[in-house]
Image 1: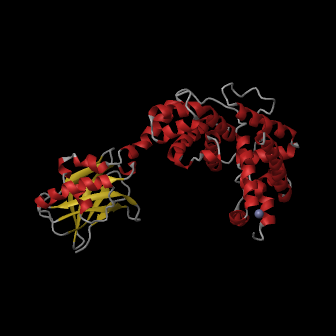
Image 2 (image 1 turned 90 degrees about the vertical axis):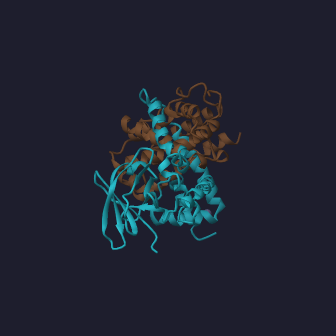
Image 3 (image 1 turned 120 degrees about the vertical axis):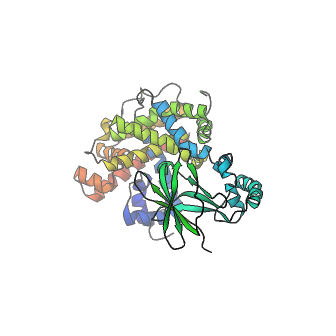
Length: 229
Length: 184
Ligand SMILES: [Zn+2]
């Protein structure tokens, strides 16, 4: 038991009500780790607080609240429902070998089911005579991760971007960065509400070091860097 | 759905089962919205808060521990957190929370509410009524509006130590009432 027992006893109610603040809160929380007696007291007081909250009068929200709430739930729940996005993408012919990247030791951490899909498609890649296939992290300039980009350099070359949330849905001008840092326009890519979008790149690209997506409606460019060498 | 336990409905919500989710929202929307309105005073903002509460319940359903409490208290704790976040964004004039809560003998609890719940609420209500007014106000301002002892001191124009004592003494008395009801 530390010296803070007395100070914590003074603060138990504020801790239970979650209105304690600052250093005194920090010290008291530290003390609670070691003192069963204080912990039990705060727990009992928190139960009393819960009972107080139950005294708030019930009140029905306006008509349609339930359906509005369920609609919102359905919207945010969708990314979970569509989790095996890789498999969905596999159905797109252009992406027939994207998930193979998961099997060739890139940064992509695949789930087991994705990996199974990847195994299937590794075979496809071997037949495709590609120079490069990888899945790179797609980032904002500040380094925030927004998704992944599958890049295939072969005949033809293509990219497929997959974003983690809905904030980056939209149309992008695509630029390919070569080894000298020069940028080459490579077409337009649209990321749909499903979170993905692909593009076949023009032929005759030199060594590609990065791919940049520039949002048509402004905002941060998204960049995927390819491994050097 | 009507006969399913709160815990079963929460599990259904967590797995995004449409029927359970609808039943869960229907069962608790009155309490969640009621608390949000009590805290915020603004029905439009309270609806946003209530929606956000159900979203968080869905997201964090796995953290619910039936051994540590009931679904309703867990849900109201979330409601309070979301509402207090909203309240901090638009700081309002201090309200005397006693006027927002019906402290008269209970006429509100619906028949289907479990007997235990009704009993506990009634005891806490009676204990609140018996508290000296200044302690009751201090406890309710903290419980509903997240007011700190410092803020209560400023609102009531009393020293910080006095505000702290009012909160502590008041809540300790309420806990006694509550524990009596649990020791049966
Ligand atoms: Zn202690």
